[in-house]
Length: 343
Image 1 (cartoon, helix red, strand yellow):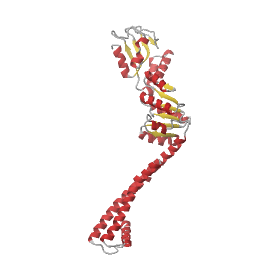
Image 2 (cartoon, helix red, strand yellow; image 1 turned 60 degrees about the vertical axis):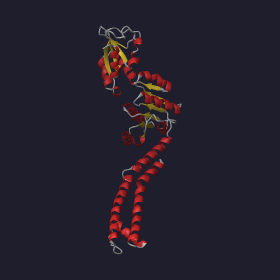
Image 3 (cartoon, helix red, strand yellow; image 1 turned 90 degrees about the vertical axis):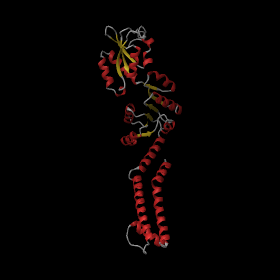
Image 4 (cartoon, helix red, strand yellow; image 1 turned 180 degrees about the vertical axis):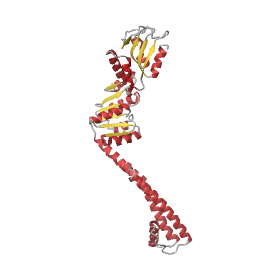
């Protein structure tokens, strides 16, 4: 960080200072060579020219000397404006203060122990961070959206340490203190990213507790092998809640309202798929049909020919021609089941 501050100072201030020194030397040599001024008279002329005091010339200037003076004034004025703008940007716009703030954050981060690391600031990550901060926990957030991170720093100030970077990078995880953290909560967009974070976290810290979200139900076994301590599946949570509502006497509209009002399941929907003639699902048990593995759908229940809803069908229940399966999942998954059902 000290190197970064030094580089920024050199970038913003060194060139303007060099340019000003160059124009002063250029003016000094010009008056000495062109007009034959003594060193003190040349310096005096430069000072009065740049300060615009207007005391007049020490001795009459030649035509070449006047042209040189005009060039010197224009060049000095332009470089002066440039130097002022660079210096004001550096101090007034807060570039230095931002670097100093990052330096303080890194110092705090290096002293953290038994903290929480949250990977991803989507809808789930946002809620997790807010709830942890309410419980006065020490939280480090890893998020790749730089613009969002700047806003988060303003919102949470010193209560939340925000690292701008890719959570699947080992360097970023180490910077977040994964080797000293108590919990790693990974709620990134894809299962592949969450799986990679899980593997890396366990590799750096054998005692860290990893909580991760899984989108595809058939990925759960992979996360267990990777060492995840707690695996959260939104679709399984929704399924359990739906079945609980349905078996307690409520109807389809009750749990449809529940799912529609939950942002976590905005990409999911309910589908009613009828089993038609020619489908290889006819006559098979739900265990044999293997619908969750083949389509990633959750089968909530089915309507038989008598139009009665059978909730949470048993593995040995047979699928009959004309049954209408009530399922929960993504649009493309429901379309896949329709293909299997010969719709």
